[in-house]
Length: 202
Image (cartoon, rainbow, N blue to C red; front, side, top):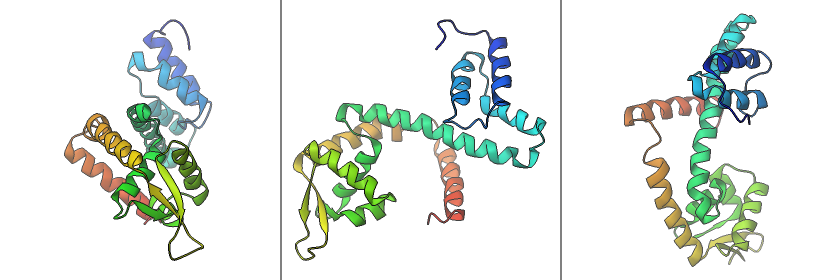
């Protein structure tokens, strides 16, 4: 990262050049540079990307590009806040979700396949998360008492106390104030639910 902050004019010019050089998706290095270089000039690199989309003759897709890129950037922002809140507990959000799911269950235990379904994640990814949690003493794996083909993942006492503390931290530092008021949150959730439903997520 440059040692000096670029001037507003330089930031705008750099943003205009870079948004024409790639697809401007959040994981693209160009957009990451834009997000860094444009902050001091209050320039929205996604808006600049839209200008370039239109200028290159992709007007019909410009709004869709803005929507997709905005959602991905919002994901980066919120995930960074969540990960920062969970860092004292040595948890990723995916591992927190698994612990929270187990804590919500009646017995603190679920078959691994059911946990995978509830989390909408592949069994392989869930199994990897279980290994990490197991090594930290937060969960255990045990055979199902009536189905020898099924393995249960079980929340330990340490896991339960950890997830309760982590939940309180997330509620206080992230979920309780994401930077939007209640009506904005409702509209955002409705829009995202519409997108999810359209794409067969539920």
